[in-house]
Image (cartoon, rainbow, N blue to C red; front, side, top):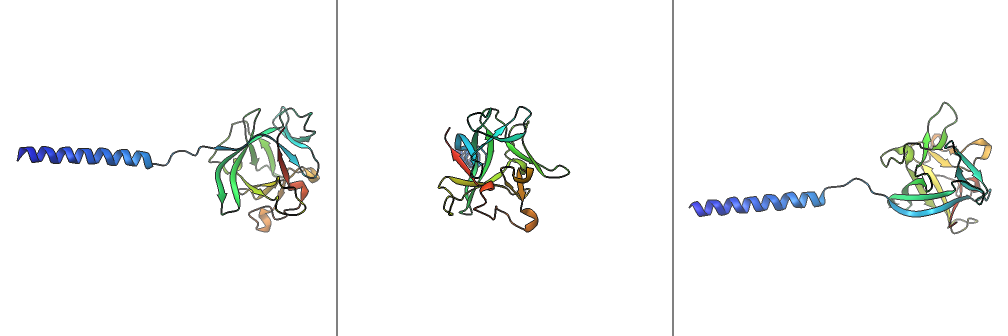
Length: 188
């Protein structure tokens, strides 16, 4: 009788350890980014200039060859969302910080964050949509939309870095041929 009790305890212990190991293996882990694009230029379709970061962290559009920090990593956290876009972070390859959105009094503004990249922060999350299938866009054409703030990344037309579609009820950049909001992702 004593032997059966020991076997039961041993079997129970083994089953418990196996269940614990299975739970640890199946447990979700923190999001890890995959390099979607690495060390690329973000070239605006309208201006032909690169998105760059000035020494104070502000964005600017400059000639790609005179830029100081023109290379970007597009880090994917969720690809092929709704068969339409990828959820990404846009990280400056030279500095390591991400393109972020902040609400200031007016207008809404963009900057490269000085606190790195926060995978859980909506201000650092962008929907990357391929628009190379829309005429007259080139095949390497993309748009970036910050869903938290309802903003499309814009090359600075009218002095802004964004164009607000949130108020219009859009959850994407609605004008696929607005060349101020179309970006080429190119190899330097």
